[in-house]
Length: 234
Image 1 (tube, rainbow, N blue to C red):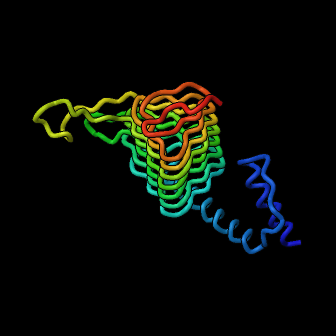
Image 2: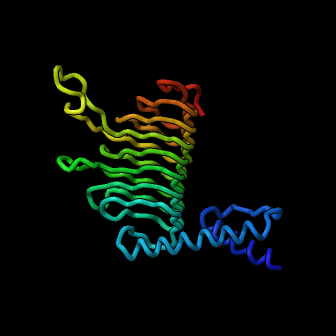
Image 3: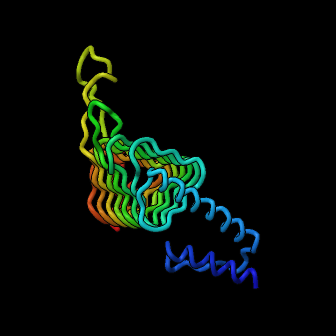
């Protein structure tokens, strides 16, 4: 009976994120108790951060240990989960938005523009997006990730380029350009994919693991390679 009650709590929480979820009956009560305990602590951590005005959210969010928020408060959607040791960095107010029912993976780094002389960049992650562990999103030139996209670990996004055309000037002191990056809805992006500035990826695209995307692609493409190219239409 205890197992059944715990299962109902477990299913209720997960169905808020995924209405089609069904729990496997082989999962024991001990695992469910640990899940509830860990997520209760995550909920209390969310309340603490909200009181400290570090996050802006309407609803329930689970925040695991080790989170770092540098700069103004960030915006989170209902039922989003922030895994352990995630870092958010920004200078300008309202420059990081994460939608409803998202998951930001372990040890990920999300940063909008960080130059005090030229602060810019908005990062918008739409609803139902999952981003794998150890990912980096640099949003100096604006980054948008469309809803229902799933992304593997070690994902890397760079919405800014350094110039190297100015002779006799150190690279670190040369000009930068920012065009921005847009990733469409319902994309599946594999592990260790890198996306460079100026790229727009259409809806319903799949990008194979390890690809480096240097140019834009339309909807419904399977991409792979360094640099990435179309393997076939989906």
